[in-house]
Amino acid sequence: MNYLDYIIIAVYLLGFLGIGYFFKENKNSSDYFLGGRSIGWFPLSLSTMATQLSAISFISAPAFVGLKEGGGLQWLTYELAVPLAMAFLLVTIIPTLYKSGIISVYEFLEKRFDASSRLLIAFVFQISRSVATGVMVYTMALILQATTGIEFWISVILIGIITMIYSFQGGMKAVIWGDVIQMCILFFGIVICLAYGLSELGGVSNFLTEVDADRLVAIDFTKWGFNNADGNDEFGFWPMIIGGFFLYASYYGTDQTQSQRLLSSKDMPTIKRLLLANGIFRFPITLTYCFMGLVLGTLLMQDVGFQNLLESTYQENIGNLAGKKADLMVPIFIIKYLPNGIIGILIVAIMSAAMSSLSSTVNSLSAVTLEDFVKRFKPNVTDNEYVKYSRFISLFWGLVCLGFAFFAGSIEGTVIEVINKISSVFYGPILAAFILAIASKKVQAMGANIGIVAGVGLNIYLWLAVPEVFWFWWNAIGCLTTIIVAIVISSFIRNKKSKTIEVVWYKNAKSAVITLLIYFLVIVVLAWSLSKILS
Image (cartoon, rainbow, N blue to C red; front, side, top):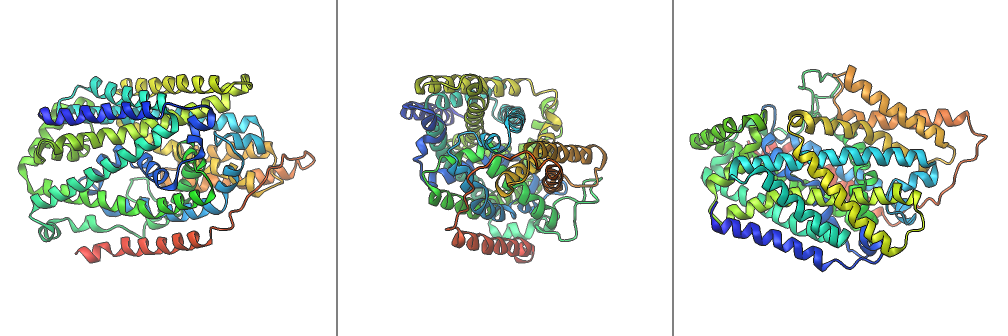
């Protein structure tokens, strides 16, 4: 890196301070957390994808595809269930949540059941999301230190402080428009790496000649995920479709970081376009960074200098990056092969991915804290007080996430995997709670709570005692268990009258649902045929 790269990084960071200042006028809760419900589908779609397309997607996913043992294009199976989940949410859960006028999605559970369901799930969200985001910032800061020489603490401070300032000032509007910019930079970075990698390999034809054919297989219909004790039964078609459907329906519909964007939409047609865009565009974006991973992995196998630089960098930082050699592939490629100026842009892309995830988390954690906890004890908050509290709570959660980033060193080796599993322990039961709240008038609060505990408990048991079951299945198992137990328990306490809510079914979703279902079939066929097309 030289002065040009540092200038680019500095301009980028200063620009985001300007975004916060530009959107600093927030008059009430709707302004600060929902952008005044005035934001269109296009920026919301990019923001939604930017939150999902994190630094892990830019660095770890290509490393898995191109370098890690057992990797390859099977990573694409993560995306296959997304269109199905978007279609389901558009018709069922989201219309009722949007109509209810809530800010925190967990408030809906109290409207239908009681406060215990709301507070428990809100608390789980706060802990798991803040830890996960802290670990993500920690990992990115370590990788920047190992490859660029930027000190770990400087990276954390730059990423964290700039993000907190523009989130603090601008609220949801600053977060969303910041995500739009970061999404564009990140995708540009992926395309640049792909293009330069192909150039270094001598073009597409040489890449197709040299690429490991085993890494081109995306779909395996023989793996069911029920014989996974050794980790060799993952990424089968059926667990990724069925488990993935429940995972994404819960993530986009009931996780505050994503549902808050849906609730920020100005009307249901905007939500329809948002979900349709997310269901369609996620796959080509993922396919692009997967091909980037294949190209860079193939180049690594061909270039001894690339191999040596990666190995020496890993050995110098093995104390911090133990077990994460593959994750150095993308940043090492950036430093070794790209010209100055482009290096600065790509380092900005890594920062963008981290800042997008952090800003979304901070804003969502602030919304949940204020709506689900603070207002319970101080309900008569004026608009001015609300905005003031919101800003300082967002600052608090930003510091918490950075705190986890600084102190994650002793546990980071397995935390990312553990956090993914923790999410799958809870996602299914949480989705079930919302389904029951909307679809059943007979389920009682006690039945729902016992069902949630049963679903979570069974998933924990599978985690600890039945390693043969691939964790993607937990999302489906936990959801179905919660529904069954809640209905059975509630059948014994029908004498207690249930709370009622207004249920809304979106009737203008037919064309979008048909499009998403057809698109699902198209991407399944495309993913299945990729190995044959490229061989």
